[in-house]
Length: 411
Image (cartoon, rainbow, N blue to C red; front, side, top):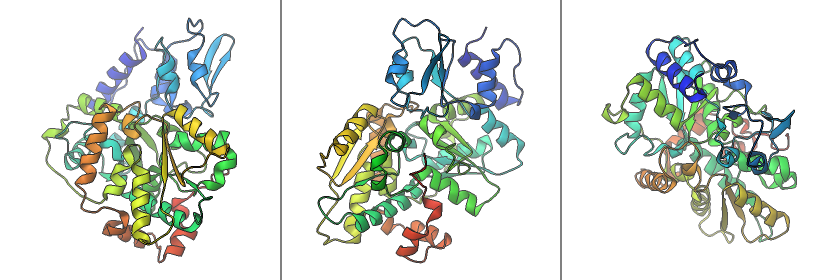
């Protein structure tokens, strides 16, 4: 019997070359996970798990109680699992793995019935090699069959502007504070599902991923959107009922690397297809502290003489995020802007990143330093997008921006 990973790699090679599925020697559960990933949690078990010599360390690691035991076997509850990946790290028997969306994506691309756009997370810098520039990566995706590549960093720019304006509106004294709602779905799930009393301090913005998907579909209603990043939790976020439909599929960087290898595509050898739309602010969202820096600089540009500036505090990792939230709920409020990242180092430390988090952070910083613009207020593409979305004023942007907001009180 083939392992889950062996089966996946064999099918992937066939899909990339001929579009045929292997049907010999397979586990029906594994095959169903590959063909219908939407039915399962972001984390799946690769082997039946009955006896455990490590006292169900996977279940103990899950703060969302997503790992359940029934008749001596574990089951991952797809409604509760956020895809944070803590259980995968905790399982010393290596019986848990990330769900994969590759086969449905390749099938959709191959059918050519609709244009398929890739939405690349800001953390992509350097992930596919130092010579795999954004322009060459765009060429690589087109070689696979995608219509084009959209950088999510430009939508991080737009959300930076929104959060800066929300900060300017709501933080008026030393007793006020704001929790960022822009980036990390695990951070947001933790607040919504466990610490609901803090939801009023969230500005209710969607993530840059969801904003990108919604805008692409507003401009091109028949488009299919595929987000790529280092995060398993984005797979769950894309399916949350109040925002589902913006992003059709989520691939991790490692899944994309496997597609390129199976198809024989080497991004670093392709021609440049460069288009620069994002500022430094949007690009540095990929590492811890990036959101805070982006919002702080934008607030300072909005009101250079404002008496109250952004005093930020960040948390790295699921445990640190929970500890930070516990401090806030206990009244230990030393900052006025709180940023949580479930992965140590931020998105560059995601479970499916290719680079180590320090290398990833350095690559993101270099990419940010190379931006033509510092903040969204300097970025003409942000202003053009806002105009195309019919935002004629700051008030309309804050009050009528349904495409950029969600109801965080609905769990």
